[in-house]
Length: 75
Length: 168
Image 1: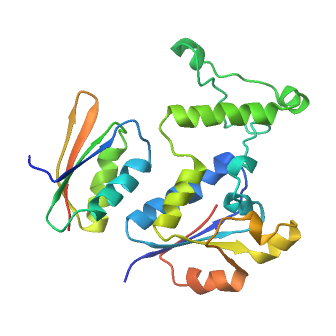
Image 2: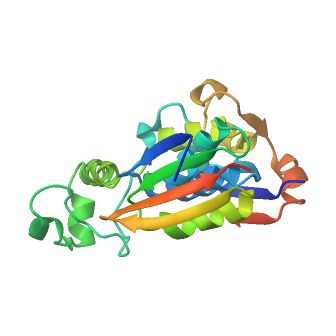
């Protein structure tokens, strides 16, 4: 998937992946896509909840090799 | 209009410093308007120097005492140390605090100073209880910038219109 910016939140724990995601999204313009990599297992549900409450679109959420990968489209 | 969260922070230890800052920063990231009213021991959360925040395992059976270093089998041991020994050893609290800080760093959890800064960046508003400032003999210069020193009435002006109000 194409993306405009990548955020590596590996090794970070709650609530840092969400706070960093919010910050990274602020640097994008509407419609651009942010890729986030995280290792916090709680981030799977948290990213969904973040997207639902902020209106940004979670395009995909996947796990590979103990890492979680998210693509979030800015509102 | 954005949702609102009000938190009353009343505890002044390292462990209890986390819930208000985690919830406030996350809510702000979700678009909430957030105010945190720090009163009594909660004032310690707003001091410039966060090294005043310590953790005490004494009388806290819920706190696991595990070592943040060494091989896994060693880290997994829960050191069940009787209260009477904890109370009698000078510096036990400082030792427990140092171990907890190491555990926090090992787990990729932010420090209190970092979380507090993120809250302020996200425009979380911190209110310091002026009455307790005087009661405990603090000066305004003991605290971080950007605070409002107010009384309970000011807190209720915001809290009365919130969607969520938490007492921590």
